Length: 120
Image (cartoon, rainbow, N blue to C red):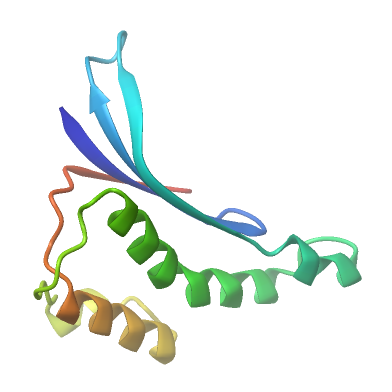
């Protein structure tokens, strides 16, 4: 059995789920252990479609709280610390987001996650 942290940020919704997967490529079965969703649709409505800069800011603002919510629902969020070296966070250009991620990792023990799936 594998545990997967799935993150979706492709358009106007931010979603995080924790899944349990059993089986192989041809017979996989999944169970949702925890999930959280935030929709930005109402924020984009005045523009007649998705406004990319707004979407990016909303994804960054909601990613840590939604990850916290999904891990909590899955029973996988515990106090502790799992800090990353500063170089690992260097790719995060937004300083406020980088600080929020570092703070989250500084107060949260590493969950038992085997895979991470993200929107690409």
